[in-house]
Length: 306
Image (cartoon, rainbow, N blue to C red; front, side, top):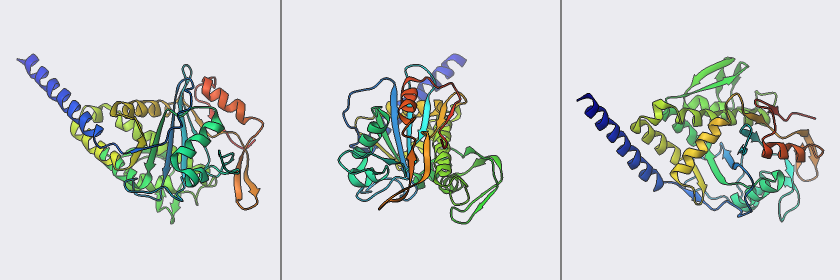
């Protein structure tokens, strides 16, 4: 009798999972983003985001800018890496004069941003994900909150973040303020990028927890909130989203490589552009090769001012 009950419960869960999969498949929002360049080894995802738009539905890209640019790479061997590229990084943009990297999105949308990142890193982007950080508030609430850490007290009127140093469970409103705060951070936009990276990683980790994965109703709520907050490159299916979440989750563990590319200057002045971030021209090429090959030691924190 007990076996029959267990079998029935498992069958119901399996059916619910299949129905959820089909439901998600029909609600994914797509964007033409990939370049079609030859594949490079491993899996490489580009995650971009902005805190200025509530999700991405009916959102045109003309003149738009990205506040967050993260490259997630799972090499064929070695630790996963999650690398934040500062939005003001002064880089070569295909077909244009050099400019801040987030200008590529304004000039040519996701396609040009992908091409710019591929030219910078030497890695072909396999999947592209845009995240609207205002929409993340609903995602975090659907998960019942996430744990976030920051080692300083904060009372920031611009982002509305009030924080005591340490790790705390954060609801959606707090997670949004956490990802937006920069004026009270001595690292400014670099620090904000690191916190946004933490929010994305924490969401991925919580979404893959057994308490969520084994509860179809919670999964439905999470999927509903998430599908309003992001769009992905053409050809991405529900199982690809699950795979992306697993890679991002791996890139948040203690063995992951994380940080930024090596930086030569946080205040590199360019006529017509003002202050930009200059990535170190002497070490950047070797840095991206090491990321691609997975040769950094597990747990390495990359970047910093050279």
